[in-house]
Image (cartoon, rainbow, N blue to C red; front, side):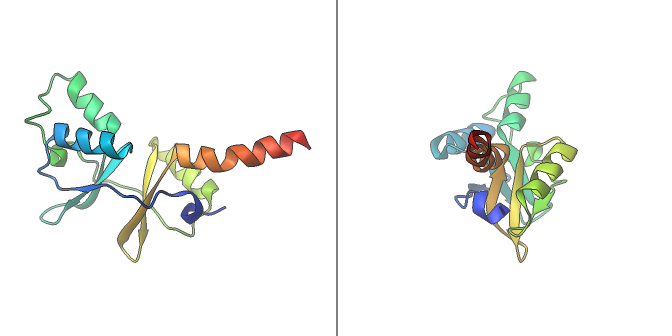
Length: 131
């Protein structure tokens, strides 16, 4: 199975000037654990995850003052739609993260998460165990 088969194509995109509260509200409303951050002036494409927001809150920072741009991961590993789920899982395991932005011709077309991969693998494993 390929990343294109598992990824979510509903990509939440925000700017670097969104506050963490705004980002959290959007992520909660969309029921996603990550947002793609477009910063045309500096880093290009980055990712803000629920963990980034949690770390900021845990450090006592104000979510109405802190911006997505200051908490965005910019050293991003990108996946291609044609990657296998094994390749995506290996990249996540090696990098210690749970989300990959999926790029097609340098444009984000989706996000694949550990949960997406697990969802795809679980039915086939249950079926194999029953045989």
